[in-house]
Image 1 (cartoon, one colour):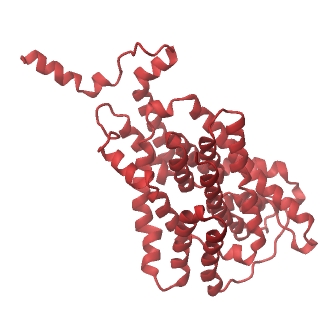
Image 2 (cartoon, helix red, strand yellow; image 1 turned 180 degrees about the horizontal axis):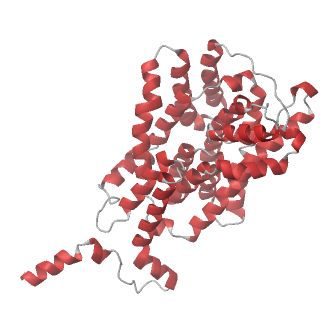
Image 3 (cartoon, helix red, strand yellow; image 1 turned 30 degrees about the vertical axis):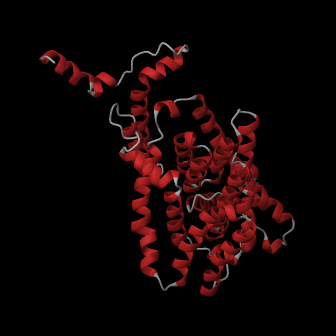
Amino acid sequence: MNIGEIFQQLWQTTGIYNFVQPADPTIESAFEQFLHQYGSPIMLVICLFLMWLGIKKQYEPLLLVPIAFGGFLSNIPLAGMTDPGGFLNIVYEAGIHQGLFPLIIFMGVGAMTDFGPLIANPKTALLGGAAQFGIFGALLLALCCFGFTLPQSGAIGIIGGADGPTSIYVTSKLAPELLGAIAVAAYSYMALVPVIQPPIMKLLTTKKERQIEMRQLREVSKREKIVFPLLVLSLCILFLPSACPLVGAFSFGNLCKECGVVERLSNTMQNALINIVTIFLGLSVGSKLSADQFLTVQTLFILILGIIAFSLATAGGVIMAKIMNIFSSKDNKINPLIGSAGVSAVPMAARVSNKVGLEYNPNNYLLMHAMGPNVAGVIGSAVAAGILLTVCVQ
């Protein structure tokens, strides 16, 4: 091999040479040919845009920044990050494909969750349940109107739960080929809860309803808080075992928080453990942001169905609160605004309910009341995930 051939070989292994792929004569569509040739640089730009959203706009930065960076790494020509044995492939197989990372995240979320507002006012669990209508409504739309398969429709529908780890867990089991698009949609829309929800809340309620003041919640005992996660897990074991991985991890984290005798474990789950896993979760999800999987018409449909799912979930909670008020006494009315917190974007959705309530009644503090359906939504999305994993597996 002469010196010219050596330099030519080195040139052909550079990123500059391989950013644009040669044309594939087997591809007939001009658009698909364009994506084949320029997919990687396009995805690098998209990943930089996602990083900008996370850093500048602070849209779920703890996960959007690692996801975007993982996507950036996965689209570097010849780096082999996502090839068998590559760094991102190893992390993905161990943590996402096997379902480990979302469960650990759920454990940490459980350790940070206070079920006191839900225990003090258990009927607000109905609001969290009603908000899951967004999941099944989007599933039906994806299946009947957009041509997705049943497993893919189930994975898309879970976006309506507004629960990132659950979305990733369900998608990794049902439709791993859609993981990148669904994860980006789920976390982007979670960050946009303060934008998406208020117009729907105002559209479905009257000014008088938005001004309803709710009675102060009773104090919840330590014993109740300890028993509650065990009760939730027991019911799950009896009626929906397929949801036990998520509900079990969540209940364990919450029990460690409330029992008061394993504070070191609880603090680790809330801080170091969840932070470490979040890093690897984001990078491994980003490994699925390759051009051939993300730059498709399906991704556009997923983004459309994601916003529909969020909207239906918000509307479902608000409408359920209005229905419950029909059967409630005058002094025991529910402010329908807290129904929107039935999505499991904790605590952002509860803060949105409180903010909108204060706009119409400066003395109306709904935050603690909204936390009831908010944490119920976490359980509801886990239960919905169990149902989807049972029904949609083919």
